[in-house]
Image: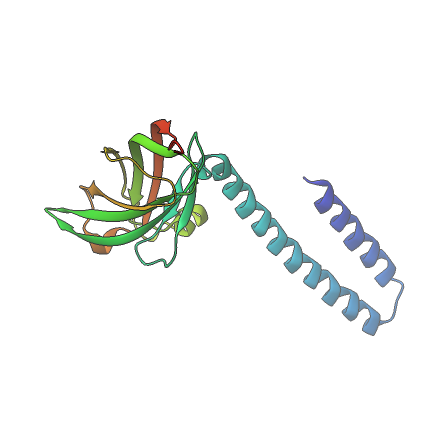
Length: 189
C-alpha cells in the first residue's frame, strides 16, 4: 500500500470518528467528501498506472518514430548520429499485406549512408496497446529494410517498406528506427 493511500485511509477514518460526534447534516457532508476522495484516488491510481506503463516505452520510443497511417504531421526519431523526421506518404495493398511509403528528413548537418531500417507494425494503435485494449486480437509483426541512397542533410527522401502480414485498412501503428552505418560531410570549396 502506498504512503498516499495510507494517508487517505487515515483521513477517512479520522473524518468518520469526528462525524460520529457530529450532527446528521455534518455526517452527510463528510460521507460525500469521502466518496469524492475515493473517486479522485481511483482516478489518480489509474493515471499513475498509465504513466508507469508509458514510461516503460520512453527509452525505447526515443529511437523510433511512432506513426499511424491516419495521423497528420511527422514523428521524430533519434539515430546514433542525430534526429530525423519521418511521416507516412502512402500505404497501398501488396499481396495479402501492404506497402508503406514513408518520407524522412535528416535533421543533422551530416549526410547518412547505408541506412538499416527496423520497423514494427500492428493492427492496434499505440494508445490501444498501452491501455491493454483486448477488444481486438493484437497482430504485431516486425521487419527490416535497407535505404541504399544517402540521406542528405535537410533533404526529404522517400522510401518504402513491405508490411507483409496486414492489409492497409488494418495497419494502425508503425514504429520505424533508422540506423545509418556512417556519415559524410560536404567539403566547402
